[in-house]
Amino acid sequence: MKANAEIVDDVVRLGIVDKAMRINRVSPIYADDLRQELCLALLELNNERLNDIADSGKLEAFVHRTVRNMWRSKTSRFYYNFRKNEAQATTTDYARYIPDDEG
Image (cartoon, rainbow, N blue to C red):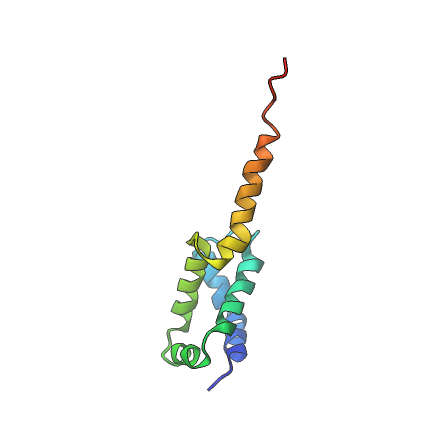
């Protein structure tokens, strides 16, 4: 039975994470943050469950699905920590370009 850190190392080293991010068209701006959040999620996963997924040959599909959910879901921890804040900042930034009617 492998430790979670060994499995995560294999997933990153084999390029499974980068492939999943390309397939889901993750913006390069968020690529590093998403990669780190995915690795953290895999490290926090129950060791027995992660080993079962890896042993059954479904690890790549699991990583792809997890990346898709993190990237697209508005209820994911990744969206809450990274994308939501930028979306709010962008709409606030546009407000300063609207001219005031002062006269």
